[in-house]
Image (cartoon, rainbow, N blue to C red; front, side, top):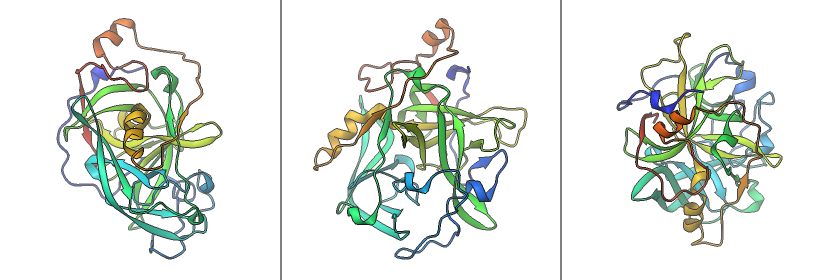
Length: 311
């Protein structure tokens, strides 16, 4: 398993790219969420029946790179935030919800890359938008090898479409620093060609989009897309291209401190422990300072690894 100590120093990212989320073998029938790119608030939005994820599981995954965690709160990447949220309800109708306040989750004087918005009013149950539970784990190795369902954007025949693919988690890293200055606990995964037809990696424009995993028989929020490794191109078939999502479950207490100002508390759902087949050498773990128990860690080291944001 690679060590985060080997990740290159990351530099500022300017602009965006035409085609975001990169796939090893892109299949529009399987990887595109909606049957059309025309999204109109108040109108029906047809889904793609061949999409790799059950649509009934993901109503809380926003159309515009946000994730609903209570009927009145959504989260997104702080460095690529938006003050409105769009969701497709169980009736197929797209609705837009305005926020009236937000906070950036912080710990130890450092801002993370998690921004929580409070909607002006809770989303009515009748709209059929179900909040996502937040995945947590007692130990970092519990994440290794877990399936991740990664959402992003992609240019499909000239139209920006919401897409999703799969990857698997490598390590949970503490104090990973974005070039924008946020310091955030992250789940790392690698994009490697030839691994799976669903293999996906992140590119510019994917920030804030949702990454899910299975727990308790449902898809739950693993994290928010936030950064990519620099110096390795996803088009380089000989390279390994590393991606980072902010580990939302590492901040459940801070999140509940904020949403507790209303009647809601975010629901944390522990992932099932899985067998661990490989871990870094003990000396590597001590040198990196990035493999530790997953959860709320208040007295963590200040050593950080930098990465590039993907706004």
